[in-house]
Image (cartoon, rainbow, N blue to C red):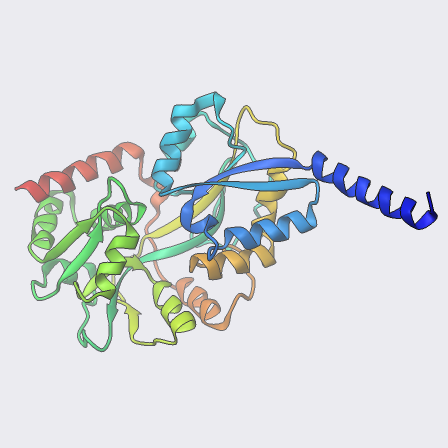
Amino acid sequence: MSKLKSSLFFTALFGFSAALSAQTLNVYTYDSFSAEWGAGPKIKAQFEANHPQCEVNYVPFDSAGTLFNRLRLEGKKTNADVVIGLDNSMLEEARRSGLFAEHSLDLTQLAVPNGWVDPIFVPYDFGQYAFIYDKDKLPNPPSSLKELVERQDLRVIYQDPRTSSVGRGLVIWLNAIYPAEQVTQAWQTLAKHTVTVGKGWSETYGAFLKGEADLVLSYNTSPLYHLLNEQKANYAAAEFSEPAVLQIETAAKLAQRDNACAAPFMQFLLEPQAQKEIALGNVMLPVISAEIEPHFDALKAKQAQKSVVDTTKISAQDLKSWIAVWQNGLTK
């Protein structure tokens, strides 16, 4: 065998052996993260380039709630090594499940409103819940959540808190603003000018874009998507006087799994290059102090000045009872 052929043979053999020895990292996540247009594929490519011994395999679900339910059904027999997508409204229940392991990562670099200290769940993006409107169609948007609830001239769409994390955000928000004895009446008042309560964000936001409502519950980052991807500046987030509620999305390692690629992958989610892809792909704000894009950077600086509700004091039982009050209020 010639030296050239020998060299080519051993190069090919080495590459083949390396591919066989790569460890698969199974990542359960929601479908918009792993979709071709989402942040997931770019994160996968960048991580695998830096860690050639690892191969990321996304297992997508239609929502974080569906994902968590699957994990509970699978229990210790799950094939998941890492989960991406559980948000701060789900963490107490997730913690009690015993399915997750401590991460041992240094979180001192995080720049999240109200701070973040958690031995299990690692945040990778966040956003403020907000009602989005079209400035060309609604020249006088509400300036508070209470005004939105009371104004019967506004057609509103939001999401079902039983199936949507965004819907749960509104439940938390309304209960943070109204005294307990006024919550049922507030839901009933809002119901009178609610067009629909949708199962998830996609269908409700789509209905809003079709002109079926004046405002839709989403995130204050949503207008940036239209501005940067469609060059449309007519969408805006209503600025409310009350404290805001944040959604903080997290990643976590599964207990009973010993995948050497899990910790490096979770650490990589906090690297500046990954944070940029996540912010732009998810249209959310980064959890570290890094320049992402001028509009995102400006919004994060503004967000830092906004008073936000401390959701760490809200228990899973609180949320369960508040959702029951919401459901009861709609039937009266």
